[in-house]
Amino acid sequence: MAVGTICVVGLGYIGLPTAAVFASRKFKVFGLDVNKEVVDSINRGEVHIVEPDLDMVVNAAVMQGYLRATSEAEPADAFLIAVPTPFKGDRHDPDLTYVEAASRKIAPALKKGDLVILESTSPVGTTEQVAAWLAEERPDLTFPQQVGESSDIRVAHCPERVLPGQILRELVQNDRVIGGMTTRCAAAAADLYKVFLKGECVLTTARTAELCKLTENSFRDVNIAFANELSVICGALDINVWELIRLANRHPRVNILQPGPGVGGHCIAVDPWFIVSSAPEESRLITTARHVNDDKPRWVIDQVKASVADYLRDNPDKSIRDVTVACYGLAFKADIDDLRESPALNIARALLAEHGGPVQLVEPNIRRLPDWLAREKLVTVDHALKEADIHVLLVDHAEFKRVRPQQGIIVDTRGTW
Image (cartoon, rainbow, N blue to C red; front, top):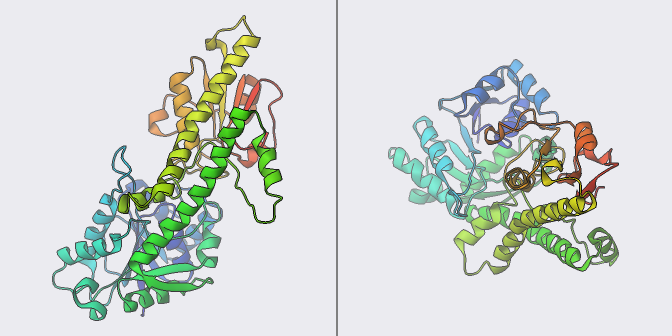
């Protein structure tokens, strides 16, 4: 299909890099976002997220006139929806509010021959739901669920497969699984991505593509859960888990991952629940893995409390109010600024509420804390190393790998210190 203009709905961690990559290939791209600050910053050629080289690509695309941002839908030839798919409240049920809002937002701008691609990681059946919402808004157009291959609008699902910190490279290099509501829909989406993709476009159905992305992250979650459970077992048996895994991995067919304080991010910590929501009785292993990983932060908190008790036993002249705990890292993984679903952030929040003394927060990749932590202050690595009595390493940022506390008790969830 011939594409002149591309609209990317949602200018976050996936939408903005995707828009920038298309714009760098000299396509006219406009990003649609409800956040005015995001829109204004992009139109100045600036970025609001930390991702290597993204600032340069965005700035060049904006200055050359290939990329702009807006809060209103406009006509385009292809619409890519890359908005969040969070949970509903404290439950693990998927919330498709943002996807629905995005679908209804672009509907008035659709014309015959347009392509709509859902990039947001979603439960099985969401792409069909997008097509249904569009059809409700535009009864003058036909959609795949109505007339099949001859539809006016083509609808497909193409989830991203990128790693924060390497997004620009992996957007181009990684294979893409593209699921169409019809074969024509899938082929049209593949033609669009081929303008920058060096990896292979693998075509399938929309439902298979949806479950494929969820399966990939659930596979990783289950394997991480095994490592996290091993660390808990080793804690009970007084065995060094890092040495144990290193030795076990010398087996030619064993490759155990490294444990951590839990699992975070908007993929691995979320996607397995989307499978569970679709097939709860059949997802026993996936559900158990989720519980193991979700329980790990509480285990870390208990380790910190035990270390505080050890410190007070060795320093009887002090009270808990005198014990300073430093949390090193708040992001959900190393060397990024993304706090979404971060176990480190949840651990820090719990310690702020439960520890009777000062808690210092160290996160070199963000400039300010979330609003609900506005009363707290970020401190530097050097400050925490000098002042803290309990050093809790939660994220193995590069800055932390270059140092090591010379005093106090270390609680190392990453095997770095």
